Length: 390
Image 1 (cartoon, rainbow, N blue to C red):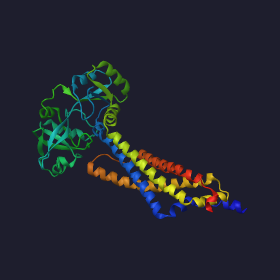
Image 2: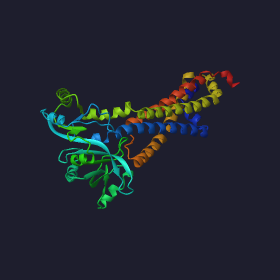
Image 3: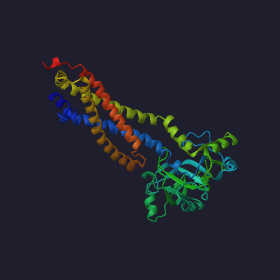
Image 4: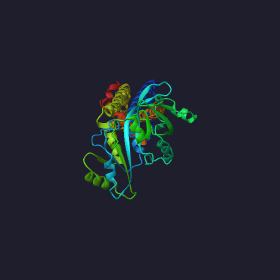
């Protein structure tokens, strides 16, 4: 009866072992928290890079996109004949098109007169470009030659343009050495490829970049009927149009840009490697803590084994220590990552945000890190001998 009662007692042995030495517990949690923050930041930067690279792409009012086969990414767009976009209108499911010029020009800061590269998009003001329903009224101001719409989310290095414009000041500056006036503000957002954006009419764009052939565009936006099958239309257009143009769905256009940063540059690999290094550092720290804990309490474990406790039960104690460390280390890492994400957004205006998928992924990595370290530390416990207590 006594043995039965003793076996059923709920003694938080794992918790008691962890809290017996508060300093060691603090060091372990600090190490896990550091590893978690490192993984959160590296994965956040990586995903933020991919999301930021398609900020403008997502805002286009289009179902299908035409680009040149020679285009590599948003920072290396090649032109193709505008007539290809007109030819696409022959398809019965196509209801509208928008030719777009895309290139980087030098913007002069109107305050300190410094110059910086900015992404310029040229389009016909009467055509649909962005999904924003308020954009049409702003685009109408571009019918006047020399007018541009400035992206208010651009980095501060381009000058206090949004503040000046809202104060009612006339904001004039130079783009590619030619005088322009800001006629309105839009919200697009910077990316790793472009720190800022401006929109203008194709007429103004061709004046700013006179070397561009009038019949050439970099992007062709195609809008389809609501009940149209996008994939079938893309296949049909790819077969009917010449090989000097490539037809993609909007989703494929977004993936086209992401794949460039993911596979054609070392940036994605670097951030993934940084997350992996954080995982390894956390494993080393947790293993050292758990191994030391098992070693220090080896006589106690041997005593329990001599009293009749099975090795499986004692191994479960070490496993619960790993779970407790994972939970207690994850929570401050999650909170710290949220604060750091906010700091990055405010400083760089990049879309680095916490999402459920990343939060779960990092927790699983931390849990695996702690449980893996506990599993390795258990080998020391398996060597415990009741004779060691004497």
